[in-house]
Amino acid sequence: MVKLEDELFHMDKRYQCQILELLKSEVVPAMGCTEPIAVALAAAKAKELLGTEPTHIKVSVSRNILKNAMGVGIPGTGMRGLPIAAAMGAFGGNSEKKLEVLANVSKDQIEQAKEFVQGQNITVEQKETTEMLYIECCCRNEDRSACAIIQKEHTSFFELQINGEKISIDTGEMDHSNEEEESTSPALTIKSILEFTKAVDIEELQFLKEAANMNLAVSKEGLNHNYGLQVGKKIMENVERGILSPGLINYAQSKACAASDARMAGCTLPVMTTTGSGNQGITAMLPVVAVAERLMKSEEKMVRALALSNLVTIHIKSKLGKLSALCGAMVAGTGASAGITYLMGGNCKQIEAAIQNMAGGLTGMICDGAKLGCSLKISAAVNQAIQLALLAIDNVCIGDTDGIIDHDVEKTIANVAEIGSQGMEETDKMILQKMICK
Image (cartoon, rainbow, N blue to C red):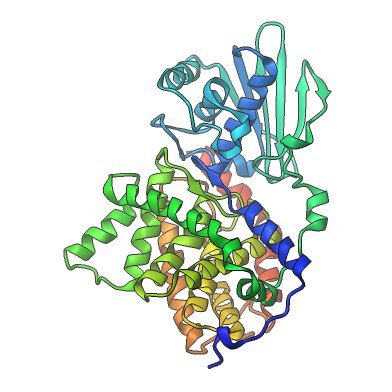
């Protein structure tokens, strides 16, 4: 087997810098699930524009925002859903902190937000829009109104209004994540991602070590307390009882699932997200860290594997879209499988095989919203990520005679993305219908 360390790469410095900037822009901290937190961000901005406390808040969101915010805990409140998220943003949020908008909310502000919700002062509705990620939040009092609209990206303010009149948006408040950024983002392939992973100065990737440590802290919280379904904690307890083996897969699953258990139940610790999702950040990073630890790989090898895992996730999501009917854990698990294959000394062909294997195994796992049960799906993704990386290392790769798999890994990724975005659009609508009609 040709080891990756022996391969010579020659990457244009400007292209390398573009990939690095993309990685840094897509791996960012958040406190709480990103969809309701983005609603809190819009509410915080609208309240700031209003200049005083609102007497009513109206929230209009796209189908996927509604789906991903119905069942998830809002940090520090013990409550779930969009009304408390909007109230928390309006009464205690700071829009300058973006996805950490609720980081400094006080106990008094939490109580004020809860009372506002209990007073039925918040209206939530689904917005008919072609945008998958759309949030419109309007704060009103007797004689004034202010609205903030977020579109395409969780922190991208698309439009601001005061009393129905549009106001100019300071470019410093924008993430430049709409069409202009899409046209300037570097075109990625699995080969170019691997080349970058090998070529980039390791010092440039140290933020990924910090990112992993942030998610490890949430995992520790989940293992030590009874959050959500306790999936990660119960795996570890059953290992300690001798019911489950103390093997690599159970170890990695316990770490990743415990982090999701805590996060989705409203843990107040921040997580490092990948492409706008904390669960994707958890799934893309913690299995890689667990495998590196168990296989006693160097810190540099682990950090480079984290770069590979996150970039593969970013690459797939750039084609699939931020929100879709496909579970993001499947996508991030694919990134993790690629990173784990790299950790084990895999070459480009074997890393591509891991991705192909994941596409053949987990494609079709639906997203039925952010909720406590997300940790169950992460468990499946981590299990497959490791098992299929091991197959790839042994040069076992699913063939192009199987279903949606193409001989070209890039075409396979395109197939998965097309199925998840266009093919499953009606599925997505039905999922939400089943959720809201219970």
